[in-house]
Length: 247
Ligand code: CTP
Image (tube, rainbow, N blue to C red):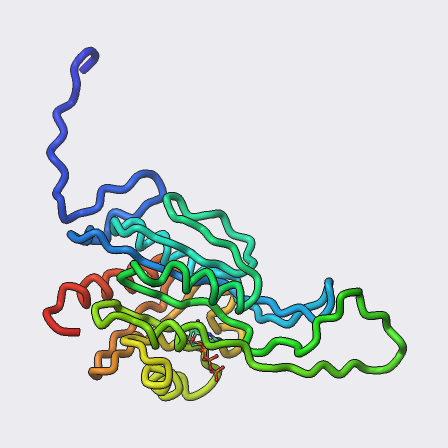
């Protein structure tokens, strides 16, 4: 009625009431959770205009950042080069190389409660970075590579026991077995096994399917569904995990 204000019911404190484009399906975490997320590919240049990388688009990591924000978490997002809009209310830290990503995540890791590493880190970098564009001379090119640091394993070495560390395993075969092996190898609590094989693989797709695996035998399938939906399911699973008396 004109001239009168509608009386709205008070919001349920456990249900997030989001704005346009935000989720209203996630429970709002009662505690102030600080979340650090990595996303996208990294690039390793061997001359000023050429690099090695992978087809990651960052969509899954950005969707997780939006879902975490919708759950009321504060979110730092460290991303390699992607063509995606910055999720509202999230602190975005753009990086290029694995070394940049290590430095940035290392700086943000201390106070974070939950680390979710979705980034597809390019595992090798050229030993030599040529300062000028290499000229074609009609023959092939041999580039020698060295490994980049393992960011997740490095951070896990100085983790607090109360921090929840989640990795993403990008696999083309034996997806669950290979993902499980990364739990111990990296010293993390949970790993999301993610197939990146073929046209249905995660890279660049609108849909995704994850199997969330824990050291304690925990196993939960998320999706197949749009990445935004899988992201909400992941955050909901982490909220349940954070609320559990033991992890
Ligand atoms: N990761 C990382 N630093 C790297 C490589 C990977 O922090 N140098 C992280 C990824 O962000 C992901 C997890 O480790 O959360 C698993 O990454 P993945 O690419 O699946 O495995 P790798 O450790 O690279 O092992 P492999 O290539 O042998 O499968």
